[in-house]
Image 1 (cartoon, rainbow, N blue to C red):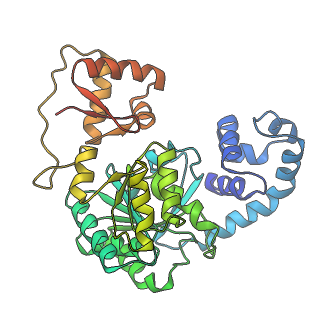
Image 2 (tube, helix red, strand yellow; image 1 turned 120 degrees about the vertical axis):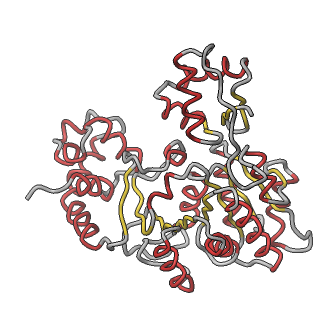
Length: 373
């Protein structure tokens, strides 16, 4: 019986020794997962990153991998879907990161992953009334500007941000360190179902169905939280806390990081305060400050109407860039902008420089660009 292409893609993903980079290399070389899965050892040797030992491991493990892939699809809940790195629904900002997951399991509204405005709010599990109130205030302020709030669904700040977003009528994405069918913490089980049923929430994980929460999964999960977000807000974290890992990952990807200052006597304030002291994060006292920094702020809570841009003096390529930025409604990172415009990064930089001289585009932190006005 002929199997769907997704089955072969999953099999490649689950084959021992095939990480995300080798999987993407296989797909780039063979174009189709079925061809890559069925390829001979000699053909696979031509793929960058594959040596004799890796090829031998791949060949010996792919039969078990295809069976595991089939079992995953059989167990996939009715409210779940899988998107791959090559699908249109894959988050563009996440795709541009150093180590994007080859696939994502999603329960709930998968369309939320296409949101143009996404900000992460993360923080400590051991939080204070001040921290929970800050998470609530920031989430509500972001929702007012149609921002999708992302977090890690952990106890404390993460859950406070998700709950405030949901109760305010906003959209939120929860990234798990377990399978999407294994909700953790278990106290959030009923809340996760409410998010899914509302159509305003998505539960996301790169881990297979049935994967249990494991301490080593959570730091790795954090790269997805900040990777799909334009900016990350840190609210309460010890210096050694997981949220500080998220902040470092965001900075590595040239994303904006904001920190909410806290009581100097509280250990949970030490992380954000250190980020601010070392100028690694911008001090944020309100969601409005974050929105203004990103160019997403408007008094009414609705995107400002922009005066039409005179196209007469623009080249074809410059007009294409303006079209993409207008459609985005806010800043775009250079790689995402180049991909959407169908241009090479080096070529688009020249066009952007010309647009800056014409006072049509301005550059922001993290090689992000937005329309002026």
